[in-house]
Amino acid sequence: MKILLPVDGSKSAMNACKYVAKLSAELKSKCTVTLINVHDDVGLNHVKRFVAKSVVDDYLREISEKEIKPAQKVLNAAGIKYTMVIRRGNVSEEILALASKEKMDMIVMGSKGRSGFVDMIMGSIAQKIVSGAKQPVVLIK
Image (cartoon, rainbow, N blue to C red; front, side):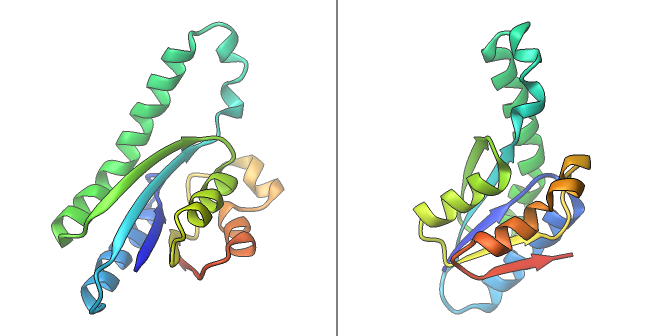
């Protein structure tokens, strides 16, 4: 079973990671997990005029690595093989695109992430994933 696990450093995302570890242990078939971390860099557009692209890239990569690290520890402890993907852009679109491209069997994600005020107005990432995904989506509190 191929599982896509979006992580953003939130408590809810860590609960989803723990759920995937438990699910993998209970399933008789092997699970492969893809961790994805996406940063919407629209807010950094004004900074890009004054700071080199490489500096912005390094900054976002460092944040992503920090947010993924706790999930890596959980999956390593459970003996689950995983790959990591770090992307920039619209969060829900990037997650859905990877799920489709890689033919994921399931998306398991936290119901509440690190989203801010814009998501309160525009709708949550989880809601967009649930409505746009072709595969089952499991939301974990």
